[in-house]
Length: 145
Image 1 (cartoon, rainbow, N blue to C red):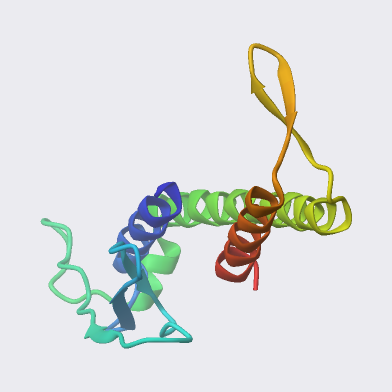
Image 2 (cartoon, rainbow, N blue to C red):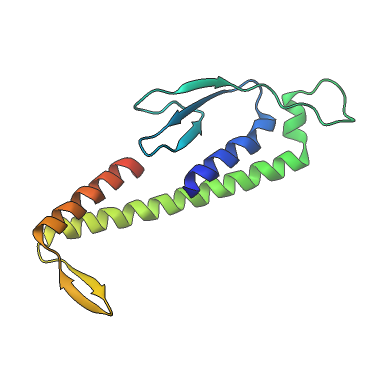
């Protein structure tokens, strides 16, 4: 969910520097609404055309893309967004690496032990192990590919 909020907030912050840009809106299988500059690889998306943000009061009636680029506040916002995107990408890479490692462990070890509570360990049944394998494969496919 935090990825969705980050994507939406990043999109909204960057709108000020976008001149009539194309944005796609779609709802995933979990019912979460997404906004992106690229359409989703699968499924349908609504194409939205964004209009330039209204000018700041007290400024001249016409604004150009160069004004947004030269605006120090906009540059600070852009820099923060880039940092957030880098941080999110790093977290996604770490998650994917961990998920792939877990999947390899689940596939290669039929006797997987998990914590059962109070520090006790128990062995996963074959059915539970297969369920975790399919859940991990789905998560990797959804978030990493």
